[in-house]
Image: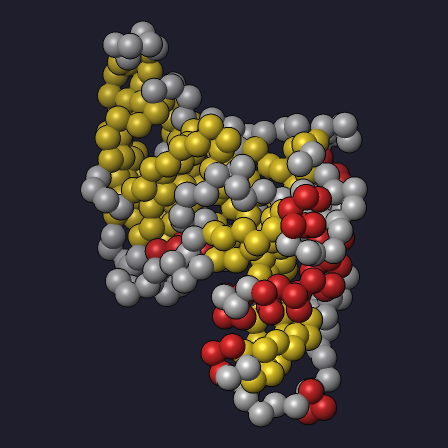
Amino acid sequence: MAGGSDMRLDKVLADCFGHHAEGRALYAAVSAAELKPGCCGYMDKDGRWTTIVQLTKPSDLKKRSFSEFKDAKIKTNPVSEDWGEVKSSNVRGKLIKASGKVTDPNTKAVSVGASFSYSTQDGAGGIFITKNNVTEKYLEDSWLADAWMEKNGPKIANDIPPTRDRGVWVVTRTFAAPERYVAVLKENGEEASLSINADAYKVGKVETTASWWSSYNGSMWKYAEHKDGLVLFMAGTYYKPKLWAKGFNREDQPKKEKFLGDGAMEPIDVEFTDAEDDGCVRYMQFVPEQVGKPRKKEDDNGGSDEEYDQY
């Protein structure tokens, strides 16, 4: 995996977890209240999430003059898990010191202290440490979101110029935790260490069940918390922009190549007026790329269809 000091950390982290089933890993802190299934938006040049419209909010769609997205529901997987640590495949963790039981002076909770060290092998690496359970939310009938994008993609490109360079995300699934630390090891030889108070621990797994962190090294670790949760991973469809050269005529457009994913989606043709080029008409496509493993009904683990949030 490529790294290096000149790489943006959000790009390095996303690349490290590039084949993760849960989707794209997020370095910048963004709350689950802002980024949720049904969000249509883009990453700005600094890697921060920008929402264009929330598909499950009719008033938002109407305000922006987008087409309707009927009967949209955001559902919550009733089975949540304590992930503890999540690291890219080339990161190795080891227990470097274990101490005896300690008592928190405020809560009187008894816990076990431990120090861990993480290092990377074969390029850049990424690590998440989460507190409490990770909650999965997803958009029911997520394929409808891609159908909505097919209708509204041209309007997005015309109304919101940054999407012509940054592309567009239609998010259908998120994984969030109340608190998280994230670290990016940009090259071989870098290490990230921490001391943690936990009721239980073992090498290769941190179970964050007591007072949690006690100390960590330097600026490598970035901490954030939010009462609504912080998104660790997002999944859905990324519409990658493909801008045709100036002077391109629609008649010259090559035959479309089908996207080899669920629904065999095709690129979305866009014609827009370039205000920065004296109102010249330009042509482009949004090419769909599936990010994250598609969710299946059996992933509900027996959850009830009645458990969902409406916005």
